[in-house]
Image (cartoon, rainbow, N blue to C red; front, side, top):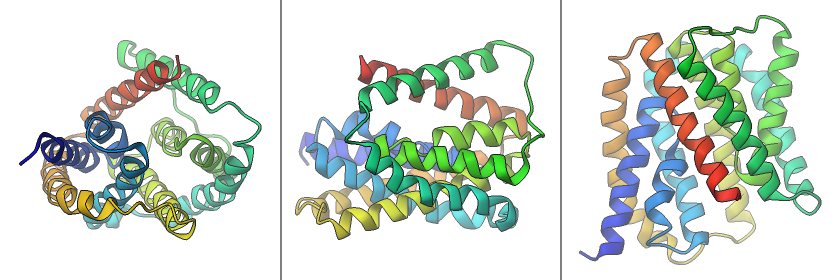
Length: 243
């Protein structure tokens, strides 16, 4: 077994584990290893495939908390936002967007992890949820960053861990599936992807399964801290990659 194959398997397991734990984070975790073993085009599409697989595997465990009325504004906004973000690609610096999102996410997570005060948002209702979904969709189409804002917003809404995860996992699964279909329709599925998927899927499934088992043992507070910690790593990664 070559070093590249081991990196693919290890990245898939790590990405699946984080996704099973939190409902997001496959790409952020797996790409650290995959970019050392795969071309960028293959790694990017592999993230979409493994993210969708991990999301689908863990979906039954939070199905009871999936409130379609709560989720709908996020989905509608997100699906409108994706083409807008893609359209903005030619006018906006992706690096600048990553830097801005990285600053916001890093600052927010640092304050929440170090401080005892936790703000909550009760205003805005479904309109505010839709605006956050729209912003997430735009960032997804522009820079592949669809999940950051809905994840933070769901935490600010002070929903329980299952309700919170149902929102951003349902949102991420929809956006990722649409993105994967768009990749396929645009002919952006590289020939090497099949081999990479063959090695990555078992690790993704095993990692997601273990992550789900750990998730069930977490109370709301521990889950909240875990999400903030992973978002903080994502924010720091964005800052590093944009400099």
